Length: 124
Image (cartoon, rainbow, N blue to C red; front, side, top):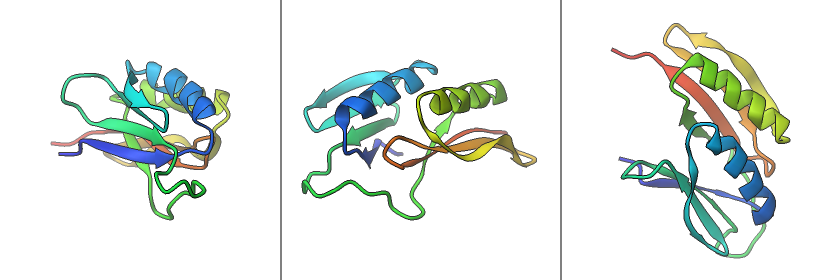
């Protein structure tokens, strides 16, 4: 259902270094892009995450309540992504842990303050 989600950056070079290393941990890579926007994914028809310099050329800012949730698949990968993000300079918004019986997650803010969640969810 979701094609892609965009998040803003004020420094494309730093953002790309962060997301290249972070998403590489789960097989993601930069699939396409131009000077002001880069799309990350795992290929195929799956959803993508795009990092961009805002089109209106105004300062990047983070929306209150906005967050990108990345399905890590399992708890070990949640822990791994959280640790990698912190190593890359992210700030902590909630260490890995069980939030409810079916949900295990961790929360960080990237170098521009965008909120990310890495999660495993057991359904059905």
